[in-house]
Amino acid sequence: MDRAIGVIDSGVGGLTVAYELMRQLPNERLIYLGDTLRCPYGPRPEIEIRTFTWEMVHFLMTKNIKMLVIACNTATAFTLQELQKQLPIPVIGVIQPGARAAIKVTESDHVGVIGTQGTIGSDAYAKALKTIKPDIKVDSLACPLFVPMVEKGILDGVQCQSIVQDSLRPLQKITGMDTLILGCTHYPIIKDVISRVMGPSVQLISSSEETAREASIILDMNGILNKTGHRGYHEFYTTGNLDTFKKITNRIFAESMDTIQSVTMERAVI
Amino acid sequence: MDRAIGVIDSGVGGLTVAYELMRQLPNERLIYLGDTLRCPYGPRPEIEIRTFTWEMVHFLMTKNIKMLVIACNTATAFTLQELQKQLPIPVIGVIQPGARAAIKVTESDHVGVIGTQGTIGSDAYAKALKTIKPDIKVDSLACPLFVPMVEKGILDGVQCQSIVQDSLRPLQKITGMDTLILGCTHYPIIKDVISRVMGPSVQLISSSEETAREASIILDMNGILNKTGHRGYHEFYTTGNLDTFKKITNRIFAESMDTIQSVTMERAVI
Image (cartoon, rainbow over all chains, first blue to last red; front, side, top):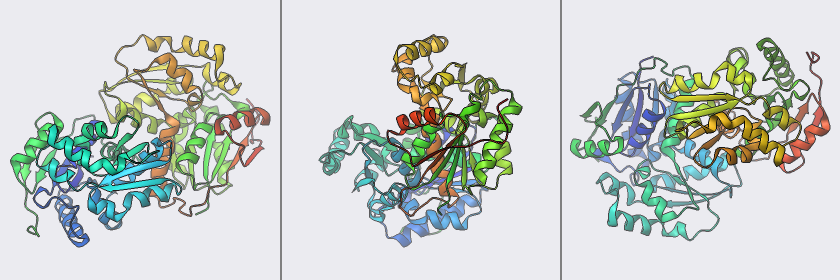
């Protein structure tokens, strides 16, 4: 079973999911596609998000992937159900894993969620949480500045701290919330800054770590876990600037990745 | 979808899984069967463990359960694969969830496992861990005194502390191990004592919490999550002494359970 796991994201955020997949499933081979050119997806209308996501999916399906991970909260919110219905392979998103992990962790049954405008506007986390646990309290906050900041490579320092501090102020005032879901795969990249701002009483849930964990389960339950014991060979594709993408990739993985290439999607930027 | 989740264990240990199922999946209905009369399973030969487990499964299948949780590590080690093959419903055990959670948590890639003689002798955790992550280091230790102690209701105090301290001594000498899997569902009941003995540098993984989390995923992926928003109604059965079972049940749940009844398995104690 040498087929790869396909991973898609609007940009570099999904690399945090790829990192966790590689750490938790070192035998598996990944093919990653980041649509950096058209990032961010968060503020775009639903039809664009769905169109762009399907274009990425078509590209990866030509690579004969055995499972698809939608490593983008916005794309998960708008396309998970249709992709699960229409693709002949298992498809997992990043919202349900984060929701389930938060339910496991919270003791106060009061959870915060931060994400893009699209993700928060879709109310997908609150729905996922309340479907499983109806009386859970959820406070959601869109942080539209985080993704562009991370995509520019601003990952710490005074400017980063200041943007995070200002953005999270509404959540800091809320009492009783003991768990915060990082509802965007870009956010684990600035997890330390978010953690400093929120303080030690709030436990952060990385949807990236949790998604990799769930991918492991789904591979196992579907009998498609790579059991050869060989380290997987990975391919990375970006629709955008190759140098910026490489810079962030090397920072996240702390090593050079096997292959990083440019790719063009069918449709131009809208 | 008002069908229940079936939960089986050799005794009261699986109640920690039931507790987590109720906490993480409050809409779901549980039917629990603890084979207290024939507990512990750990030191028994494989053929007995398989026979007893199948007897419990037959009992629960007459209750039209929608999923089976084998909330016993020993039974999981010896029957998971055949139950997954032969039952027409999803079946999950407690070993893989603990293994996956440990892989997520460990930073040193050096994990300890404690369990019954049967579980440790089967090498099931080491196999589960190494199948996913071949270079992980695993130290295993059988703690045969823990289950009889817990089943007697000795859950803290000097005697409990002393037994735990003596049993875990071989693991305390090992350096670099940052994660310890409680590879028996009885052990979370004495988690605080184990945690005191192992110290703060070792993170404990409760296979109970993790199994409930994975049950949530499997229900979701199979479209059999109860979405009615009503609290489930639970039934508990024991093959052994009803008073002891009730005492431990009330301690674990900190409330009286809906129904606790005696039941007799087809075969007598061997």
